Length: 113
Picture 1 (tube, rainbow, N blue to C red):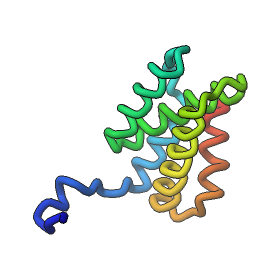
Picture 2: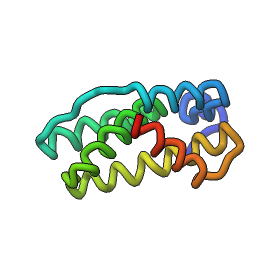
Picture 3: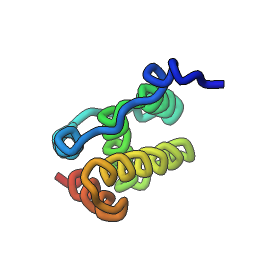
């Protein structure tokens, strides 16, 4: 059971419009690398996603989209890509007052940059 007093510690506030624009810019500019070993990569991605930080989700998303273009996704990669896509599109749609489909197009465009 979750107590009302514990909500502040357990539930993150959604991002606002300014942070949403920063998040899209972060997707454009992030140049990180990931492991070529699927298990190491999956563990690193899972750890980033457990932070519940939109910017960490963006990094996982961009790295997996790059691997997807090379047709090199493992089953864990496909799961993480779906989860990060859902998270980012919902978070950005809420922050910017757009639809998830519009935000998907926006983050795909940012990934190509």
